[in-house]
Figure 1 (cartoon, rainbow, N blue to C red):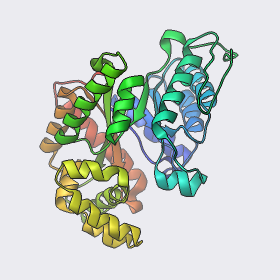
Figure 2 (cartoon, rainbow, N blue to C red):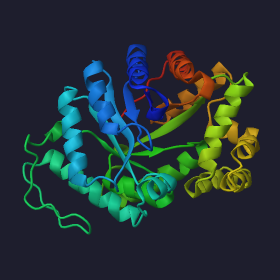
Figure 3 (spheres, rainbow, N blue to C red):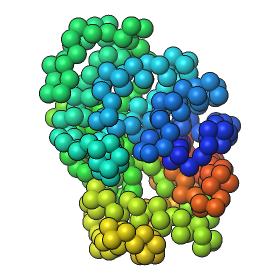
Length: 340
């Protein structure tokens, strides 16, 4: 399994210590996000020198605030610093709130932008000279000064929630990163991946499905449950997640939360997260139930990325506790994940 977090919730020393524990516990990858926390590639550069075996990837960095060439340069840098441990390279449009309110960037034509970014990043990482006549970017006979990575280039995964982005990922990327993955959404994704791969003349089995695995630290503690509900409420407020809620029969529940969140009644929105939402989209069951949820992911070839939902007053302790809990649930299984 991999793991991630909101890097702004931990100090540098706390983050380093946490990732080092994940490495000791046998996690295969730390996948940093970015949003409004620490710069993703600065985090990975530090961790490249503070870890020894774990893969260091992104899940995700957005492809609007950096050019494809800069993304390729960053990938090459972390690859070299870590001795070839960079990956997966998770890219996405970024959250609407973060992009519009944080960057002041309007998300336009995300499917075309994704295709163009993947093509240029992959080209620069694998070819000695690369040109591309794109809609936004037109690198011409260009190369990275330190040369391409070649066959060791990291797999590029696209964050996909809506059907069109999932299909785009199957056409051009090596994988798709989901959230709120359920039997219903995985079944839809498999169909979309098969269709998208066919359109791109690719093998659908070569498209890795990964998912963020939102995890409650203690389902018997009211404060921990509140933190888990708060995390889900944040995502209910995003239009991108309503489709998943709909196909799971929970669209009305999610929209009720969304209305309260948009009215900035955050505590009310949190309390409106129903038990059905919580149980469907978060690891909040008994150890046996959580282990079976992980087994289901492994059996379906899905790569889980553990995503802690900590209590604010126990931020550091809960991050460590979630790593140990999820590792224990996975260790109880005889199945192992496979990353394509």
